[in-house]
Image (tube, rainbow, N blue to C red; front, side):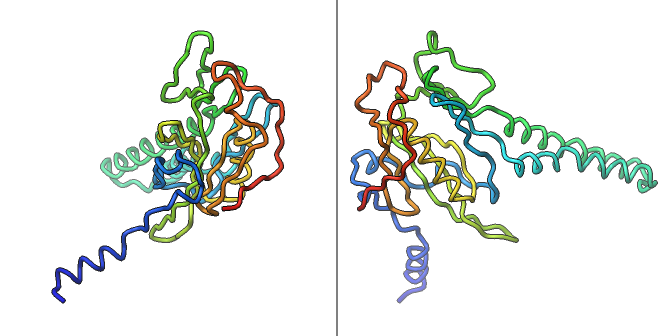
Length: 250
């Protein structure tokens, strides 16, 4: 065996095994991608799904996510003040470097705070899912946009595990995605707490009346209500909401 062939065999052995979506027994699952939609993911729970009413679900930022953002925002300011009052800086160059440090990290922190407090909402009255401080106007906005998605366009939910490796840690993050009729996807949330992801995905599945495909368990969750029985131009009816687990055996 030549060296080139040996290297090719090693490369082939390292390639991920293609995911067999036929286990879900759904033509839409077959044309949907099963690699991560959003690479990466936090190793802590970033948000928690709250049921505001029978027609509205909100993802609220977690305490861990808030503390993470505040570390980037506040800690650099505290450090630079300590250095200033302790006379640590012996030159303007050192002070300029420290100022740059203080300037960059709070920007990252403020961005994380923005993402933490940005509303993530599923609203049947409006007929939209949105990730935005601006609510969609159902009477004027008839199509989906980047951050405003019509609930009637969502055909299924998808959970995908992704193994994350870093220098000091290794963990599995789970992303929850919307799946549309054309097989395209939209990432909702992504973190390492599978139990929370699964529970919240089931809640959304029941809320929307669409199936949930879980690539980590190879199972389909079927909601009690059925979206396909509804008028696709009308708001969703919350009747029949039930959080009882109903898995289809494969």
